[in-house]
Length: 202
Image (cartoon, rainbow, N blue to C red):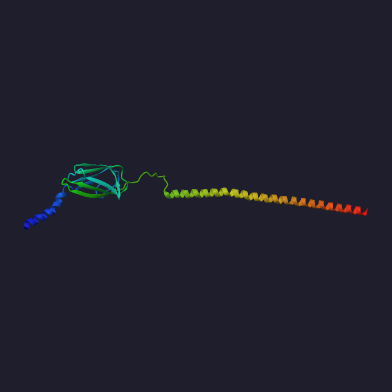
């Protein structure tokens, strides 16, 4: 009885190891925790035993699923072809396979993509420089507008001065004309009075 119990417990302990011996992951590209600095065209998983054709994999960036062009099963290897190069970020490669024993196995690995960002020209201004140039342009425009406004202001002032001078010139003429009218009226009054006195004496 004791031997039966020992054999039973040993079988329970060793069965998971035997069942998973042919379905464990033996290698991958990219590897767990790897940092990639170049574009890759495909990702692959290699297991210790052949896997069924129904096995599949999925690539995630956060909660966003990255579509794969196709997934091929080649014995113990599963290969996924990328549609476009991966952007910088952290990715999770999840898989679900079925070994020859029929037991489904799932797992995942994580890797990062950190490519050098190129394409910026040396003479390309930065944001601060662009803002500085923009502010300088605005200041120049303001200065130009002020310069443009000053001549109009000066012209208006000159016009007012000229009007004042014209008025001042017209005032003496009006005064002289008024004086002539007064003198003429005075002479008429004197003549009328003179004629009146002459006729009265007669």
